[in-house]
Image (cartoon, rainbow, N blue to C red; front, top):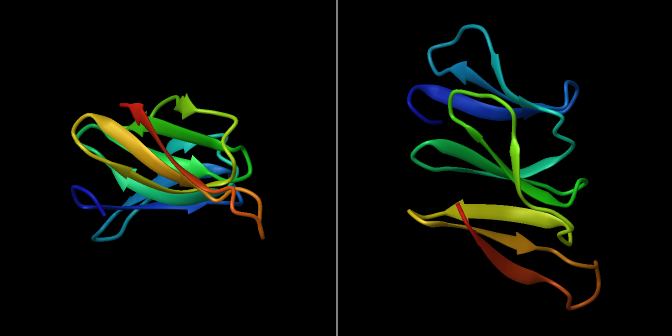
Length: 106
């Protein structure tokens, strides 16, 4: 939830959406999203990991065209932000010690 909204992934529409906390009509923030595994909210942007696309992306909190921050990741599953960077965990190959933590500038 951010600024009165609940943010969620709509897998049927392959999108990231928001709905007012008090109820109402859902709005699309970003389209073309395959499998969101984690969200993080910064001051101006929403960040997410997409495990099927192997990407970390962002969109403004008002919505729009997503920007890919990192691609060719190894099953990114969790994301966090601070004032300057985006951090995420890559699951890696199941059953193998190939996971990692990565970082990029916002």
